[in-house]
Image 1 (cartoon, one colour):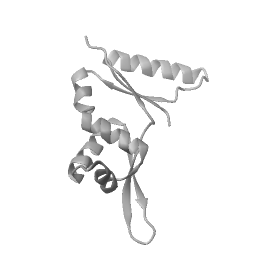
Image 2 (cartoon, rainbow, N blue to C red):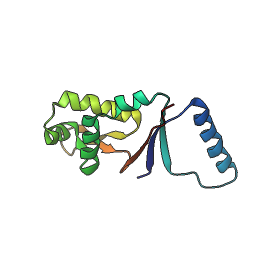
Image 3 (tube, rainbow, N blue to C red):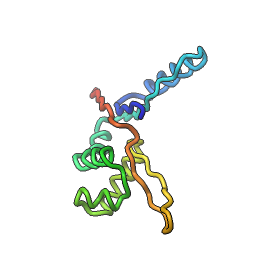
Length: 124
């Protein structure tokens, strides 16, 4: 899995990083295998990474599975786990894919987008 970084940053930081990647591509240099998720406000990071969601990420990283399986392992309400999975998927920390089951339908399988993420916050 690739490197995943959650950080605070400005719009200028975002465009600067884009220019650096484009320049590397133009020069034929390898593009870093990392994903960076930026937040302008550090408070948004704390809304995303709650204690429950951090435990959820760890559980999914350890053993991917269906939402029902994960909620049973964590002994949490399925609808609460689903809401947390949706938020972490929107942020890019989790991947949700539809898996066809032999003989009886489909399920959504949840897995971690990376084996770990690096959290960086600079408060201005």
